[in-house]
Length: 246
Image (cartoon, rainbow, N blue to C red):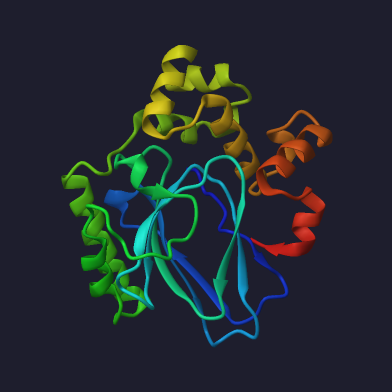
Protein backbone atom coordinates (compact mmCIF):
# COMPACT_ATOMS: atom_id res chain seq x y z
CA UNK A 1 0.00 0.00 0.00
CA UNK A 2 1.05 3.60 -0.54
CA UNK A 3 3.48 4.74 2.14
CA UNK A 4 4.28 8.47 1.80
CA UNK A 5 7.35 9.77 3.56
CA UNK A 6 7.11 12.17 6.47
CA UNK A 7 7.80 15.84 5.96
CA UNK A 8 11.49 16.63 5.73
CA UNK A 9 13.50 17.79 8.75
CA UNK A 10 17.01 19.18 8.39
CA UNK A 11 19.63 16.71 9.62
CA UNK A 12 21.21 19.35 11.85
CA UNK A 13 18.03 19.79 13.92
CA UNK A 14 17.97 18.31 17.44
CA UNK A 15 15.22 18.33 20.04
CA UNK A 16 12.28 17.59 17.70
CA UNK A 17 10.40 14.30 18.16
CA UNK A 18 8.34 12.74 15.36
CA UNK A 19 6.20 9.62 15.84
CA UNK A 20 3.67 7.87 13.66
CA UNK A 21 1.57 4.73 14.09
CA UNK A 22 -0.88 2.86 11.89
CA UNK A 23 -4.61 3.14 12.48
CA UNK A 24 -6.64 0.04 13.46
CA UNK A 25 -7.10 -2.46 10.63
CA UNK A 26 -10.77 -1.57 10.04
CA UNK A 27 -9.66 1.99 9.16
CA UNK A 28 -6.67 0.92 7.04
CA UNK A 29 -8.38 1.89 3.78
CA UNK A 30 -8.88 5.42 5.06
CA UNK A 31 -5.97 6.36 7.33
CA UNK A 32 -2.29 6.12 6.52
CA UNK A 33 -1.21 7.01 10.06
CA UNK A 34 -1.71 8.97 13.23
CA UNK A 35 1.30 11.18 13.90
CA UNK A 36 2.80 13.48 16.49
CA UNK A 37 5.52 16.10 16.14
CA UNK A 38 6.74 18.16 19.06
CA UNK A 39 9.73 19.88 20.58
CA UNK A 40 11.34 18.07 23.50
CA UNK A 41 12.62 21.42 24.78
CA UNK A 42 12.60 25.03 23.61
CA UNK A 43 14.82 25.29 20.55
CA UNK A 44 17.63 27.80 20.16
CA UNK A 45 16.07 29.13 16.95
CA UNK A 46 12.88 28.83 14.94
CA UNK A 47 12.25 25.42 13.38
CA UNK A 48 11.46 25.18 9.67
CA UNK A 49 9.64 22.14 8.34
CA UNK A 50 9.95 21.23 4.65
CA UNK A 51 6.44 19.94 3.91
CA UNK A 52 6.20 17.39 1.09
CA UNK A 53 3.25 16.95 -1.29
CA UNK A 54 1.75 13.45 -1.07
CA UNK A 55 -1.90 13.91 -2.17
CA UNK A 56 -2.99 13.13 1.40
CA UNK A 57 -5.24 15.23 3.62
CA UNK A 58 -4.31 15.81 7.26
CA UNK A 59 -6.47 16.88 10.17
CA UNK A 60 -4.15 18.78 12.45
CA UNK A 61 -4.46 19.60 16.16
CA UNK A 62 -2.28 22.15 17.96
CA UNK A 63 -1.75 20.70 21.44
CA UNK A 64 -0.39 23.95 22.84
CA UNK A 65 -3.63 25.78 22.04
CA UNK A 66 -6.82 23.65 21.82
CA UNK A 67 -8.60 26.37 19.85
CA UNK A 68 -6.21 25.87 16.93
CA UNK A 69 -6.91 22.99 14.52
CA UNK A 70 -7.67 22.51 10.86
CA UNK A 71 -7.63 20.46 7.68
CA UNK A 72 -4.45 20.72 5.61
CA UNK A 73 -3.41 19.53 2.16
CA UNK A 74 -0.66 20.34 -0.33
CA UNK A 75 -1.01 20.09 -4.08
CA UNK A 76 2.01 19.36 -6.30
CA UNK A 77 4.90 21.19 -4.70
CA UNK A 78 6.57 21.64 -1.33
CA UNK A 79 6.19 24.47 1.13
CA UNK A 80 8.30 25.59 4.08
CA UNK A 81 6.64 26.14 7.43
CA UNK A 82 8.09 28.15 10.32
CA UNK A 83 6.83 26.42 13.47
CA UNK A 84 8.74 28.56 15.98
CA UNK A 85 10.86 27.37 18.88
CA UNK A 86 8.22 25.36 20.72
CA UNK A 87 5.34 23.36 19.25
CA UNK A 88 3.27 20.22 19.66
CA UNK A 89 1.08 18.96 16.83
CA UNK A 90 -0.95 15.77 16.49
CA UNK A 91 -2.64 14.68 13.29
CA UNK A 92 -4.52 12.16 11.22
CA UNK A 93 -3.20 11.50 7.71
CA UNK A 94 -5.83 10.23 5.28
CA UNK A 95 -4.98 8.38 2.09
CA UNK A 96 -5.56 10.24 -1.19
CA UNK A 97 -9.25 10.27 -2.03
CA UNK A 98 -10.53 9.23 1.40
CA UNK A 99 -11.41 12.77 2.53
CA UNK A 100 -14.88 13.85 1.39
CA UNK A 101 -15.16 17.08 3.36
CA UNK A 102 -15.45 20.56 1.91
CA UNK A 103 -12.19 21.34 0.04
CA UNK A 104 -12.76 25.03 0.81
CA UNK A 105 -12.09 24.26 4.49
CA UNK A 106 -8.57 22.96 3.83
CA UNK A 107 -5.39 25.03 3.83
CA UNK A 108 -1.90 24.46 2.42
CA UNK A 109 -0.01 25.29 5.60
CA UNK A 110 0.07 24.42 9.28
CA UNK A 111 -2.84 26.21 10.85
CA UNK A 112 -2.21 29.08 13.24
CA UNK A 113 -5.66 30.57 13.73
CA UNK A 114 -8.59 29.44 15.86
CA UNK A 115 -10.71 26.89 13.98
CA UNK A 116 -13.99 28.34 12.73
CA UNK A 117 -15.30 25.51 10.52
CA UNK A 118 -18.15 23.07 10.99
CA UNK A 119 -16.19 20.04 12.18
CA UNK A 120 -15.89 19.33 15.94
CA UNK A 121 -12.13 19.87 15.91
CA UNK A 122 -12.03 22.07 19.01
CA UNK A 123 -13.98 19.46 20.95
CA UNK A 124 -11.58 16.69 19.86
CA UNK A 125 -8.52 18.81 20.55
CA UNK A 126 -9.69 19.44 24.11
CA UNK A 127 -9.94 15.68 24.62
CA UNK A 128 -6.43 15.12 23.26
CA UNK A 129 -4.44 17.75 25.12
CA UNK A 130 -3.77 16.00 28.43
CA UNK A 131 -3.23 12.48 27.02
CA UNK A 132 -0.01 10.71 26.11
CA UNK A 133 0.38 9.66 22.48
CA UNK A 134 -0.86 6.10 23.06
CA UNK A 135 -4.12 7.33 24.55
CA UNK A 136 -4.48 10.09 21.96
CA UNK A 137 -4.76 7.33 19.36
CA UNK A 138 -7.95 6.05 20.99
CA UNK A 139 -9.54 9.49 20.68
CA UNK A 140 -8.37 9.84 17.07
CA UNK A 141 -9.81 6.44 16.15
CA UNK A 142 -13.19 7.30 17.66
CA UNK A 143 -13.13 10.58 15.72
CA UNK A 144 -12.35 8.88 12.40
CA UNK A 145 -15.21 6.44 13.01
CA UNK A 146 -17.47 9.43 13.65
CA UNK A 147 -16.28 11.11 10.46
CA UNK A 148 -16.97 7.91 8.51
CA UNK A 149 -20.49 7.65 9.92
CA UNK A 150 -21.16 11.28 8.96
CA UNK A 151 -19.80 10.83 5.42
CA UNK A 152 -16.72 13.04 5.78
CA UNK A 153 -14.39 10.12 4.96
CA UNK A 154 -15.06 7.07 2.81
CA UNK A 155 -13.10 4.44 0.92
CA UNK A 156 -12.30 5.61 -2.62
CA UNK A 157 -12.09 2.63 -5.00
CA UNK A 158 -10.46 4.68 -7.78
CA UNK A 159 -7.55 6.05 -5.77
CA UNK A 160 -7.26 2.76 -3.85
CA UNK A 161 -6.77 0.88 -7.14
CA UNK A 162 -4.14 3.40 -8.25
CA UNK A 163 -2.24 3.18 -4.96
CA UNK A 164 -2.33 -0.64 -4.95
CA UNK A 165 -0.89 -0.78 -8.46
CA UNK A 166 1.55 2.12 -8.32
CA UNK A 167 4.45 -0.16 -9.34
CA UNK A 168 2.72 -0.85 -12.67
CA UNK A 169 1.77 2.73 -13.52
CA UNK A 170 4.06 4.64 -15.87
CA UNK A 171 1.52 6.91 -17.55
CA UNK A 172 -1.94 8.40 -17.20
CA UNK A 173 -3.21 5.68 -19.55
CA UNK A 174 -1.86 3.05 -17.14
CA UNK A 175 -3.58 4.85 -14.28
CA UNK A 176 -6.89 4.81 -16.13
CA UNK A 177 -6.48 1.11 -16.91
CA UNK A 178 -5.93 0.06 -13.28
CA UNK A 179 -8.88 2.24 -12.23
CA UNK A 180 -11.05 0.66 -14.97
CA UNK A 181 -11.99 4.09 -16.32
CA UNK A 182 -11.48 6.02 -19.51
CA UNK A 183 -8.93 8.82 -19.26
CA UNK A 184 -11.79 11.34 -19.42
CA UNK A 185 -13.65 9.60 -16.60
CA UNK A 186 -10.44 9.43 -14.58
CA UNK A 187 -9.85 13.15 -15.08
CA UNK A 188 -13.34 13.99 -13.84
CA UNK A 189 -13.27 11.55 -10.91
CA UNK A 190 -9.90 12.67 -9.56
CA UNK A 191 -10.79 16.33 -9.91
CA UNK A 192 -13.99 15.78 -7.94
CA UNK A 193 -12.50 13.63 -5.16
CA UNK A 194 -8.98 14.97 -4.57
CA UNK A 195 -8.70 18.08 -6.73
CA UNK A 196 -5.82 16.65 -8.80
CA UNK A 197 -5.49 16.06 -12.50
CA UNK A 198 -4.25 12.54 -13.34
CA UNK A 199 -0.93 13.99 -14.51
CA UNK A 200 -0.40 15.93 -11.29
CA UNK A 201 -1.29 12.94 -9.14
CA UNK A 202 1.09 10.74 -11.10
CA UNK A 203 3.87 13.30 -10.67
CA UNK A 204 3.48 13.37 -6.88
CA UNK A 205 3.07 9.61 -6.46
CA UNK A 206 6.16 8.81 -8.56
CA UNK A 207 8.41 11.10 -6.53
CA UNK A 208 6.99 9.75 -3.27
CA UNK A 209 7.51 6.18 -4.48
CA UNK A 210 11.12 6.93 -5.42
CA UNK A 211 11.95 7.25 -1.71
CA UNK A 212 10.91 3.59 -1.22
CA UNK A 213 12.56 1.93 -4.23
CA UNK A 214 15.06 2.39 -7.06
CA UNK A 215 14.01 5.54 -8.91
CA UNK A 216 14.63 3.85 -12.28
CA UNK A 217 11.57 1.69 -11.61
CA UNK A 218 9.44 4.85 -11.79
CA UNK A 219 11.40 7.12 -14.15
CA UNK A 220 12.89 6.64 -17.60
CA UNK A 221 16.33 7.97 -16.68
CA UNK A 222 18.32 10.07 -14.20
CA UNK A 223 17.54 13.35 -15.96
CA UNK A 224 13.79 12.75 -15.89
CA UNK A 225 13.98 11.76 -12.23
CA UNK A 226 16.03 14.79 -11.22
CA UNK A 227 13.71 17.18 -13.06
CA UNK A 228 10.56 15.70 -11.49
CA UNK A 229 12.13 15.46 -8.03
CA UNK A 230 13.20 19.11 -8.09
CA UNK A 231 9.75 20.26 -9.23
CA UNK A 232 8.07 18.48 -6.31
CA UNK A 233 10.62 18.97 -3.52
CA UNK A 234 12.55 22.07 -4.55
CA UNK A 235 15.87 20.18 -4.40
CA UNK A 236 17.90 17.82 -6.52
CA UNK A 237 17.89 14.27 -5.11
CA UNK A 238 21.52 14.58 -4.00
CA UNK A 239 21.06 17.94 -2.28
CA UNK A 240 17.86 16.76 -0.63
CA UNK A 241 19.62 13.68 0.77
CA UNK A 242 22.46 15.82 2.09
CA UNK A 243 20.10 18.30 3.78
CA UNK A 244 17.11 16.41 5.12
CA UNK A 245 16.19 13.40 7.18
CA UNK A 246 12.97 11.71 5.97
